Amino acid sequence: MRIQIINPNTTAVFTDGCREAGRAVAAAGSEVVATNPASGPPTAESHLDEALATIGIVQEIAAGQRAGSDAFVIACFGDTGLDAAREAADRPVVGMSEAAVYMAALVAPRFSIVTLPSRTRPQSERVLHHAGLAHRCTVRAIDVGVADCAENEDDVYDALLAESRRAIAEDHAEAIVLGCAGLEKMAAPLSRALSVPVIEGVAAGVKMAEALVSLGLNTSKTGTWGAPPAASLQAIGVSA
Image (cartoon, rainbow, N blue to C red; front, side, top):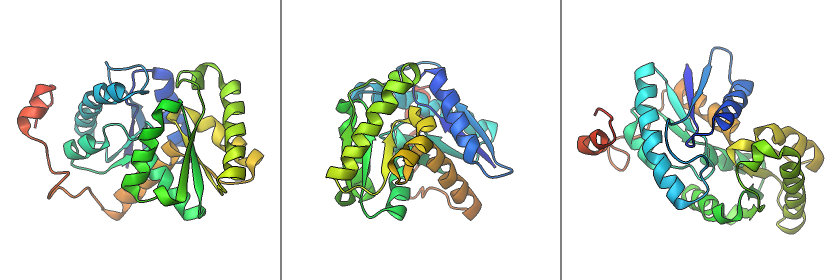
């Protein structure tokens, strides 16, 4: 099967990291590719960023379907554009955040999300609300920008470790969800340092996408996630 990871921003280093994270966990026989829109925000750190990125995501979905992708993973915490992507796709679309919190719920009675920067906490809370898991999770944040994940890895790691320790002590968290697609390299060392499961959403999303394809499960198209109007797709250069 072919799993396509879509990085909603235009920063290639994040796309490359997502590809590595996906390929590291993919089953034998799965092809993992990663793409990003040609235009849009360099990072997704605001509601406007999310709105701008959604158009590029739908365009990447259309291109991926023509290329034969069997499922898609949206690689941005907060699951930017997920509903629009599910409308536009005729095959499964998994949000990395949704996948991460569902997996966390399978391994811990309580868990905490540690996201970044602080202003993106509402995006994490939105995911928890839709997943029905707000009562089992506390959202925390560190005040660094998304770009720091690539440019200042050591500082970001130290901040994540400190905030995760506070989550374990104060929130009674028994697992940690990393709230950004740029943190895949830090999951294993953080888990060792904290002695609790640490869930990275891109990897979780790829495994969930593989499961959906293997089980023959597709997004329901009979109502909310039915195909959008052809005129709306044509407005952004996508054929219905």
